[in-house]
Structures are given as structure tokens and as C-alpha cells.
Length: 167
Image 1 (cartoon, rainbow, N blue to C red):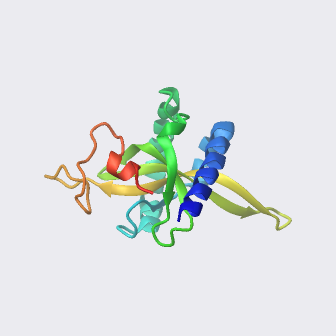
Image 2 (tube, rainbow, N blue to C red):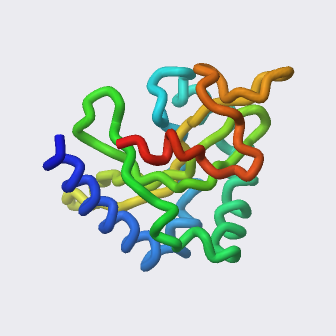
Image 3 (tube, rainbow, N blue to C red):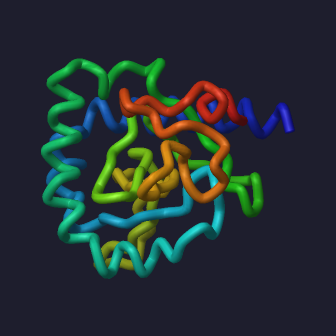
């Protein structure tokens, strides 16, 4: 497992460098590539259906939020980014941001993933894009993060240390 974690750290550097060198184009591409993916908890909600139903609404709030994170000077702070393993296979990862984005009752982690696209000559092109990883949700009358109630919903929008150190 240590070897794969080292690989994830190296991949994370690639994701991070891509983001800082292509930030403007990545922001402009969000409407074309937006999706919600499973986060640290797998299969807690149908993220494909969430993307389909709420995607356009979320995008309208997400893009200004990302720009504010950039203006605050946090978005390019590398200490606020790290790899998170895919919980189903542990062989792939997404690159996650520590500050959390809230839309209605749902709490998301901003993430970078890689995608493969075919050009007009059927050549594969790899690119990176922003997505949201579902982290959990708020439930009326509870201060605990749902569904597992294993941490308090962070008022400062920072992922709790117990989840941040997860590898």
C-alpha cells in the first residue's frame, strides 16, 4: 500500500500543477465537465442522479465560490490539497481540497479528477477538471455530519482532521 500512496502523492503534484497553470480554462470548463462523485464515503447517495437534477443549480454557486477561494489565497495553498483513495478499489484517487462547499443540505469536497477525451482523430487526450465529491449532509435537528454521524458539521467549512489525515 505504501508504494501506491507514494504514486498518489506524485499524481497529486501533477493535478496541483495543472490547476495552477490552467486555472482560468478549468473554471470556464466547469459547465462542460461538471459532476458529483462519491467522496470518502462510497454509495451514500446516487451522485449521478444528483448531478443530473441539481448540477446546473450547483454550478451557479460553485464557480463564484471557487473564485472566492482563489481570491482568499487558499485555493493554491498546496497544504490544503491531498489525494483521497477511491474507496471501491483503492487503486485510483481524486485530489481533494480541505475547505468544503455547501449547497442546501449537502456538503461537498472540491476535487480534481482526470478525464480522457478523444479528439477528432480518435487520439486520447488527458485533462483535469474540477468536480464535487459528496462528503455528507446536514439533517435538521442534528449537528452531526450525516449519514454516519462520526463528526460534527464544521462551522468553518474545513474538513475535520480525522477525515483529512485519512489515506
